[in-house]
Amino acid sequence: MKKKILLFLFITLQITLFHHVFALAKTPENYFKGEFYSSVKNNFLIATEKMNDNRFEKTVIAMLENDEDGAWGLVINKPMGSIPLAMLIDPSLSNTPEEREKLYGINILIFWGGPVEVKKIFVLHSSEYQSESTKNYGGISISQDYNILFDIAEDRGPEKSLVILGYSGWGSGQLEGEMERDHWILSDLDSDIIFEKESMKKWPKAYENSFIRL
Image (cartoon, rainbow, N blue to C red; front, top):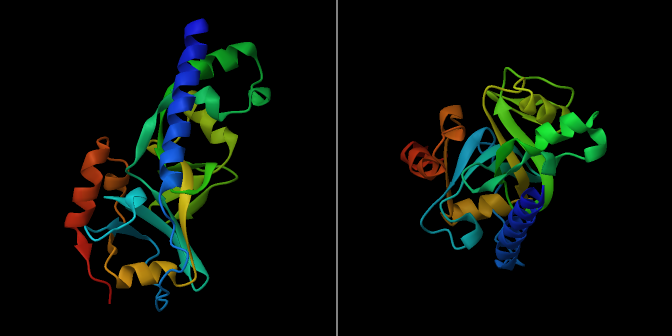
């Protein structure tokens, strides 16, 4: 048990440092506002070599919403490390000590989804799984409840999934302005790339399939 506690503290420190490093990156106070267009949603947003924000270097983002008020999506290729599943679940939600112990024995890879609400949990997953909180986005889905974490622990969860902390968001016209400066390009949303086991391969694969918006 002592070793488990030390492991939890070490991983928690790593995640805290990860958040701190990204928080140090400069956020533009007066961003260039571009002209709104609706072609970003349901695509990959891919950082180019001109990206000048080190938080998003060689980043691939699954874009889930985009309208005149702004846009948001989840980074899919920035793993933070593995932690026990129990660290993501309120212990009071576990029915028995045996259930809690099982959760401590299951490690899960956590991804950084972006600099907004970094403690908020998203499970991006294949669309055959459904729960009360599930929202479908084409061939992928998002769930945000504890049930999916318990189902993952019981091998009753989605066939493929990423557990993601935080998201990436832009205000009105902000993303469009960044794209007009060639900081981002688009690519078709591809579930094979999202759930690719080797995260380092996601950016080059998505970049290879990129296209110029019309």
